[in-house]
Length: 215
Image (cartoon, rainbow, N blue to C red; front, side, top):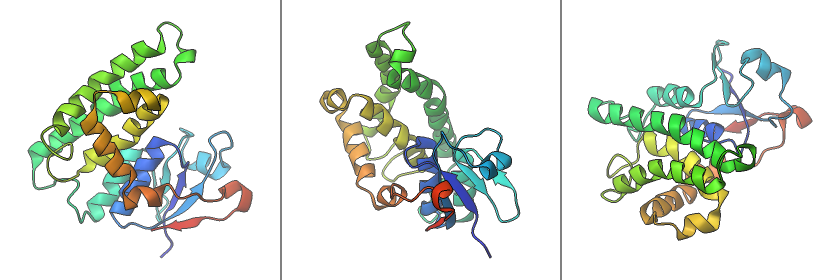
């Protein structure tokens, strides 16, 4: 059987978490690395939204939301029980925390990262708004190593790429900030084998017309 095709962009946090979900589920795909300023016609034909990730399954169906890709993969194989299928209460907590990340926090993150495009307020204002979510995470991590307890869940892997992006806006500020638990949690993810694998560099699909097996 051929492998599903994944269109991805290495530095995109949505694509990062999709790739992590696939690797954590041990679901191999053929990776087609792209540039967002030069999108392949095949990808646009599969998904009109025009952003990564886009996963094309063997039957031709398309999954083009990163969280849906993670869940699709882990529903097939979840060796670390990241979905917590035996605990509906934690599942609801996971869903709510990711929703806050993808909604309110991501909105402030974009304005913080591109503050020059949003001159209504200074960069520090957007950072302070984003810190409300960081405060929630810091409180959770003050009593456990991961967001939902003693073991990682879908929430940790789905949220961490965006905290990484927030930290990179002003590395000096973040390293001196009052978020020691988040700093430790983030460092743990950055040093993990799965993150090293998803951040491997591949030639661009449009340059070489060659996909690479991500497994």
